[in-house]
Figure (cartoon, one colour):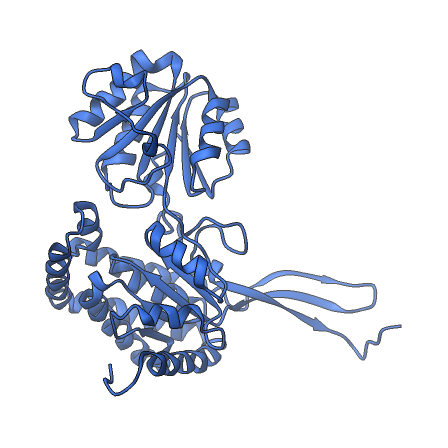
Length: 421
């Protein structure tokens, strides 16, 4: 960053460059975008030792800052996770290009032929915390959708993000696309975030990806439209008709596979009729895996379960902690979820299709799972290659936001000297 420039000047320069790049990307050939992503994937793999070294600096910074083990896990990169970044870049490159796709077409009695086609949003601003892989995912998805993107990573992932961003730039150069298509804010200064939130002349949409504090700040202060990615207060309801093996497998995976991601289950709702059987078996298995279970008045009487406090209901732990309570039936579970959910992801475990259908109809979260781990709440697992976040609002995009969700549309109307009466 040029120390002679103010944050406002730096961000204005970034915004102008992004807007110019977006104008060019809007009609960039699909082949060029795919080539850029393939070249970026090659660059990431070739630079994996450098990326891991940069990540070590970030881990030291995070440790000194006192990050929780879950947050440190989000921050950490190793060769396996870098391979995951490479695989995501290649998967996005291989996807069908959404730009120009005809969504609908029809002809009017007047003779007008009308097509609704996908078009890029323009410039996307992404503000995220901790997870350096978001640098690659967000950059790749925005490029695939023909958007320029301004990335503002968290202070914890500063060095990792820069190393990954350098590989994305290699990809753009290899494909002859403007380097300003994917820009990384070159400072940890929080003033840069404020500049992005008010940059209505340059940024078309903001995507915040992080904790409740970050998303709340963005929603309060942004003058630019926001795709909100709220916290993942994820619930699983274990029905009286649940299969005990499926319940055990799904819940253990949903909680313990990775505790620090937004799809991790944070609260179990157990049907009263199976508390003494399936419920106790699941809770005991969680405790054996090192998960602290905080139960309601009934469950806390069981051995190894502590009593939940009032603020345990509707809480995202991102840690080896889960809340648990007894419910009377599926409707009781639905009522609880409506009160405490963040509208991210919820699950139901049952062999009764009528219960599952009732749950699907009446719970209004972005993603609902039946007999499947909530850790599948991920754009990559949905076949999108990656995601820029899980949108929990109801306008424009909802659920995993992939390349297709990063487009808008326009109408193309064709006549033949047609005039209106």
